[in-house]
Length: 261
Image 1: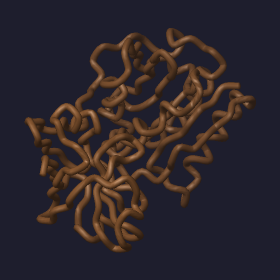
Image 2 (image 1 turned 180 degrees about the vertical axis):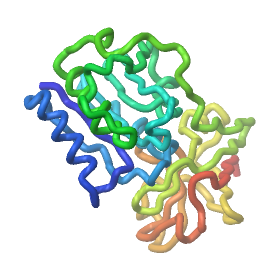
Image 3 (image 1 turned 60 degrees about the vertical axis):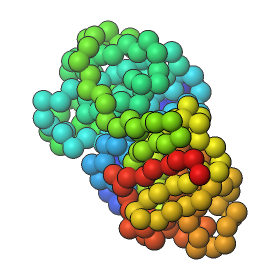
Image 4 (image 1 turned 180 degrees about the horizontal axis):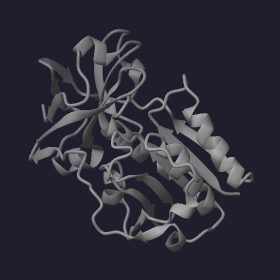
């Protein structure tokens, strides 16, 4: 059975996500639809890219990932279908797939051109319903990419900035704040290893200094700031039973530096 995932900034107040599911099931009633999230901050392409990168590999091979965080809906931006070894991604060409292009090899990229696979009454403001949903449904029925679009070589990427790495020091920034107020950076565990930084590191953020990398949120008392490697493999600033984002008044774009002690 084919799986289609949905990742959007639609929220759940309105019927947008549900409408997409209705379109998909109207074309392929046998597909399984799974919500990764509909609570991406509005228009936050960088957050969507990070959440996608954190989640997509945990789905079975053959899963179709549909991502609609699309401030440019109705404009001249392209809509992409990207085939990797194990997955197929549908997303606007707005740098949302930057981390996929970075970590997946041998990507085949197509842009959507075959309007006969769209809904007939195409709107300018709801391409999630009118393009992404029907195209995903047809792809789940093994319609080839050549019947959906044409090869494309100009996909936009480079959204997530690279940390600046030196011996015994890495400087980066926060790229995502989760629902608990944890602040997740663009500094990976591999960056730390390459720079020779161990669990005895010193982390600086918003004028605060945090000593050491912990292995759990409960390793310090409630209300204390801590640093650890997140489940996605990136340096995370957290607080036991409270929001690090609130305590630090920090969020996406906040600078963070980690160095040996």
